[in-house]
Every structure is written in C-alpha cells, then in structure tokens.
Image (tube, rainbow, N blue to C red; front, side, top):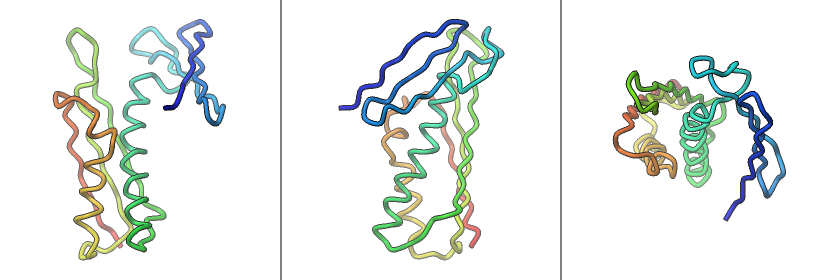
Length: 136
C-alpha cells in the first residue's frame, strides 16, 4: 500500500506528497475550469498515469526480453466531455518505438502496454485508442 497525502494550498492548487519517497507533485485547476493552468490538473495526471504506466510496463517486458526501448516516446491526448458532468471521455495515445516493424517482440510489447494496470483500471466508457509506430 502506498499513501499519497494531499494538502490544499489555496487558489485551486494542491501539493501531493508521495509517502515512500516524499517527492511532491503540485496541481492546479485547468484554465477551462477556473484555474490558472500553472501545473498538471488532476485529470492531466490520469493521462500522465496512462502514458507512464504503458511506458514502464513495456520497459519491464523489454528488460525481460533483453531489448532496449530507450528513446521510446508516448503521447497521450486528454479529451474532456462537452456535457455535464465534467469527465474524461477519451485518452488516445501514440507510442513511437525505436525498433524495426518486424521485431519478433512487437506483439508481446504492444500487448504489455495495452494491459498495463492503469489501462485496466480505467472504465470502458473512456475511449482509449492506442497507435503504435515501430520506427527502428
């Protein structure tokens, strides 16, 4: 179990402290929801969690396979609802892998990304298409 403690610091800002490491992450409300957009918004962190989770689990699998994914990039777009209640409706992502398209590890690495814990934790109503680009 990991504890995250959050302190509301005013003006729609929060500081979240990661229990094990004591590192601090700050958030702000987005500009389209009364904030200044001075930091990640809470929903930005959901998109960030998805992209970093896919990257991390792919990295773990690549290490097991003896493959180096250094230089891989992941980009996640966050799309919010136009109607109430305000919510994330889509998290499309692109993964650019610096390995050749005919890599024998392609299928297992892609499936690892699509089965990362964050991907599996998001409700099915959040559309999350993922495109892979093998560019080695």
